[in-house]
Length: 251
Length: 255
Image (cartoon, rainbow over all chains, first blue to last red; front, side, top):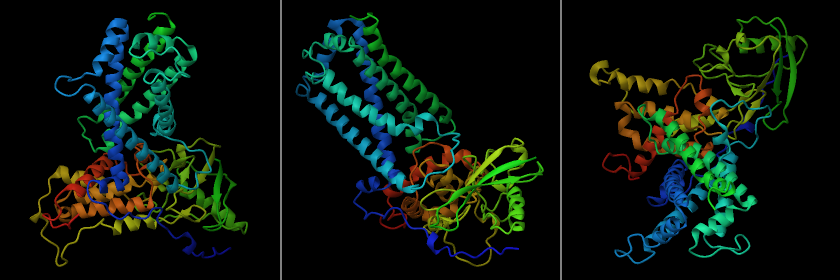
């Protein structure tokens, strides 16, 4: 018989992976905790979802002809115009989106780097996931893809950077879109990026309910359905534009 | 039945580990997974080798001592079951089964399949209790608790602290454990007087040791007690309240 040798467990002592931060005044104190960071991610995610839905819906005017969508784009600059200065509300929305975007990315980065510390040695055998789906495990890939795409998309159709869109004419939204999307590499970028966006939304639009603590047997089933339908509507709408241009439906 | 076991062997916390392959012939389908490890250990001892170390105690699924990754799933393929209650009839005859310890920064490996789970104790110490005056037991009907509330609190209180939620979580987060240990008290009248202090303290201690939730839902499927991630949503809501409510008025500090 071999006696099991007693082993000291002192080497296996548990040490914190994070120092508790010195509390800041409210509401900054909320952002110091990861639970609070998830709230920020969820709220900024909702802002993003509202924007994405509005953006997709507005762009459907592409199918109503050049005059209609050019007028719509111009109209965005004068929302509530006589009441507030011209472009005022446009800039309120832009600044709001930029702030939400920066917070969303910062919270994501900070959660990612914290979670890496929580499991420094990964499993040596293959994991068999049950509930964690492909969408939830690729958030950190679809996120940066969307980030890069936003940069490209702004250069292409907002700033009209010469290297990206040489035929850009300010205010000629219809022509700019049709020219840009009639180049097949650009159309491919738009399709791929919107698929990534759809996958990101499929997890995010469900996940935000959990992060915000919106949990109720009456709505829990609906949360998944909502996320799936939302992602589907966005992807279908957004991908229809490059496809319509490529197939010559819009020209 | 006959199985091939690939078991993680590691001499100590800092030693380099590796998989060792063991044959387990003549296994009855009524055996539990831990009993198969017992059989393997018996033959290892007979050969004069060091047996596989693993944690176990009650072997009836209520103590939370046992737990290991079996074929990449915490507590193996059967839902709502601890490793000790996992029977070999759930596996195909002749299968190769890979066994690995829980892996997380705050679950350091002591030896083989044994991990140090005392980080859970740090979370409980931070507020997973109610402070009451001791004395004779109070009359049971002095403090009425509605049946639904008692049921919900019991659903959370079922947590046996095995660590499967942390092990299964892709982020190594302990949200399911912490929310269960928090909400079974926050639901009951006895838990109210310390509710916001407890919530703040337990969540922040949890974040010192473990990763954070990104809503994969993997913990819920690994939990041997089927504790729902609904409790995590509940905890998220309570944490923001704990930081925001007038704690001075409720006598729970100034925070």
